[in-house]
Length: 93
Length: 417
Image (tube, rainbow over all chains, first blue to last red; front, top):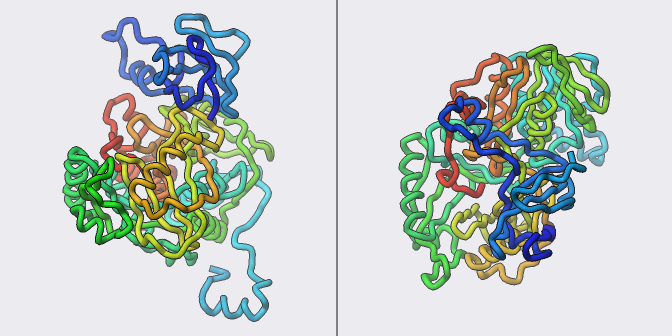
């Protein structure tokens, strides 16, 4: 359990948010050209990192907007929050 | 077996104040090389090693465990065992496990306290009723015992359930699998460890895997905190940490690791002699032999490796428990904990070869792996020994995420495990 600093509403309890999983998975530009392997990679395969992970969250019980979070999944510490479409902070790998 | 447990050994050791019991499994230092290494000393990993030695006659096996055996999800689950899954592939897999459970204490000469007290799944709306009835029919076609109970029969089977039509989610009936039940989770790990150790398996605790060495498309060995260990077959059974190990081999798995919580109450006199699960209000409860209520529910929604879980999940779980069992309203909860469960998109496990030769994965059990422990070990051992899956786990391969041939047990099973 932790607090998330929504870029639109400020700091709120995590239970107000829903997790959208790994961020920056780009939707295939030409879906008809994709092989089965590429589809599997896009749809199912996840980094599932223990450590610093880039992920999407939705403030579902608040402003209902999506945004990105950098979080350490080994201790749930949130390191950075940034809006959709913004470049991920470079100081985390 | 050298030190067979029996009533006579109990009496003999009682005479010496129980001070001369022999260590149940060895504590060796790792050798330089093994034929097969199992990564993960939980129930599934130890069972795999046990069946590799017992049924496939393999020698020179090691189980590497980063902490202590059975200290991960094996020691953190709510010990529910059942096999009433919807799809044929799952029914085959889980009922294979259930059949092994039925003789496991005798097989291991270790009391795993397997108790077939029945598992009841409740229906709270018309769709639940349709789904659960469909599941009982599917179960019976697969030779798995299942009956539908109406509200009065539910009340008769478990009198403390609130079956009043006035509650928010009234009980409209339920399914019952009488062969289902619970077992003592620690004993399962210890029993398999003792059995495997007896057959010469090296169980190496406090030994964390740090890297996988490859020679082209074939595994060569493992970097561990106790040095490099050579091997050409690695079976990974690392539950929540499967993706971490896969990453060491340059593989990506279709998994997300999330905290799943459980909690126990203060011990009380026997009050509930079965296991009751409810998906719509999402909570399940049974009572341990010590008298504690064992309660569990859903996972957190986000990826985390913290083994804690969120407070709001506990709150929702207990709300559900109180609605169904008002009698528990003044119970005090003693302990709460979390385990990290690796969840597949189709909520079915992976027991599979990979595209790297000699590397096998047994993962993705998600929220319901304990029930499958013996079957999972048996089938994974078969897969490793023969380099081919058994027909019971053929459907649970990694390639199903490419072919699209998923075993979609989300909602089709009883969601909660």
